[in-house]
Image (tube, rainbow, N blue to C red; front, side, top):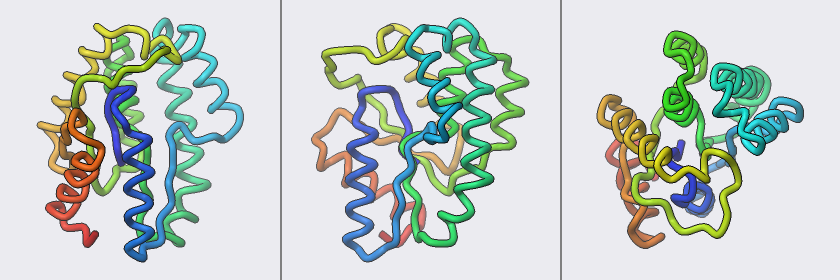
Length: 190
């Protein structure tokens, strides 16, 4: 899984990792979270767009949780059968980091994380956000908020053994290289 703040290059690095693994002969699937299941996916982006995500964080996190459970129960088993790697562009840490920052109930958040599949390995891209002409939602438009969420991601990485931090403020090629190096350190044959 590749996690991190908005506008750090997660989507680009996810695509690069998928292409690298495919060229190396692995069967690979790319998944972007939230998963486009129809209803909950549209509801998540509607809540992000109108600011409700931050106004009712418990509800927003429950919608994310529902989206992940649907994917986990109905899609993920089929993907696991067919692939050597499944590379996610975000999964559960972002739900936790943004939820905690918005004041979502910590018991509810911990309960949801308990039921969401734990990844084999997570790369957290860390750094200052790359420039962007527009903010797509209420999270992206608040730079001070993003700085506080960054601290949440770093804290998670420092307290979990299956997570590595990668400096996102290097060249695209260096970020890709560091992702592969960290995967190899974790025991993945890539």
